Amino acid sequence: MGGYGDVQLLRDDGLRLDGRKLDEMRPVSIEAGILPAADGSAMVTHGLNVAVAAVYGPMEAHPRKIQRQDRAVIDVRYNMAPFSTSDRIRPGFNRRSREISKVTAEALESVVLVERYPRSKIRVEIEILAAEAGTRCAGLTAAAVALADAGIPMRDLIVGVASGKVEGIVVLDLDKAEDNYGQADLPVGILPNTGEIAFLQMDGDLSPDEYNLAMEYNFKAAAEIHEIMVDALKRRYEGGEN
Amino acid sequence: MSNGQNGAELRLVTPGMAIGPSAGMRVGSGALAQNDTIIATRLGWVKQLNNTVSVDPINSAYMPRSGDLIVATVAEVRNNLWFMNINGPFQGLLPMSLAPWKVEFGAARQHMGIGDVVLARVQEVDECHNVVLTMKGVGLRRLNQGSVHSIPVTHIERLRGEGNATIQRLRDACDCRIIVGENGKVWVDGDADGIAWARQAIDLVHTSGHKKTFEADMSALEKNAPNNGDA
Image (cartoon, rainbow over all chains, first blue to last red; front, side, top):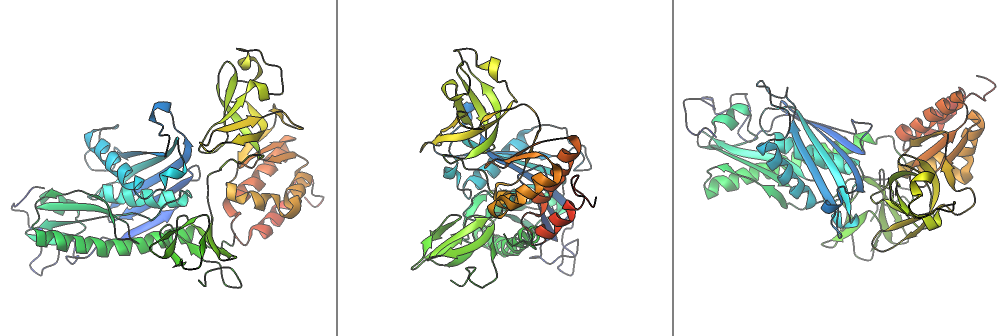
């Protein structure tokens, strides 16, 4: 959040630098079941972001001290590949990836029926192959599709979307320039069928009206992405009869 | 509730998707009632039978049940028991008293080590999901040869076929011994060509077991089987 600056983020015709309208999302495509070795997997392409998620388990939780007697533990590892941005990222965990892993795990715990698998662990690996702002949302969406693909019982899918503010105007789905030089970023995890919010973070400042508009944009985008998620899961098993 | 399979096309649902009103209906597996609506909790096909709505999952973890015949792998060894990987959310416990040998305390390692594969039966599953296995029984043994392959638990019936017809056809086609564990692990033993062909067949179950074209694909594969006179 660079705040006000000399960088122009909105064109004179009211559109954004990449030609999108204020409430327009970057193109999203999702493919389920891309990793044959994983129990469930998905790849989400959101604008220039590429996120791959793999789910393994449920399996016996090790070390045993992490086991919970009444529920499964969701072990999320979010990682950005060294080549995901123009500046090489040093491999391994860092403060940011730990934080995103934690909030993603907590968001997923609210939709997965963890009480069905006491003492076990569900491993979710999220790898960001290309990054252009909004990777935690793309990663969360990919993780939700991968969990559904793995047959993990969930009470809803979960969609990661973000809105923000640039040049004093609320916009949907920030790109890299808007994220770097804008004034606010509001990523949320939305349960599309119930409309509940599983995670919400905010960077920068929004007035109550701006916040309400940003959330309106987020819910609209979540509905669109949810359709793409459902379509990806159905496409994976098309031709099926069971 | 017009989503059952009675004459209608099967409906694929994703988690959170509304299946129909819950009034007068019972909720089966893979679904739950929420605000007067039955919603799916799994990716799968909606089934309706005797006023019970359930979702037949496309993919699922193995949930052990008493009496299941499984192919398990030794994961840990203690002085008097083995922890077995049963391809499920919980490890199975094989005490030395239920092993097929007389095992002295502290000598468990001399009989089976980590990575050894056994054919075992689930003796007991308690309410805390503690799984006890037994190797006392006809045919239960350590599997010293052959190879182990995996298929989704939901495709086991496709591999077996009606009255074990498909699996028997495969056994005849590749001249191999094949045991399908309820936990999705398949043990194959025979000559190298037979195992290689059986592996192709198992891979086909893995990739196409849910498709309508499965039977045709399997028949096509059988034409290349080692024991097929046409091959």
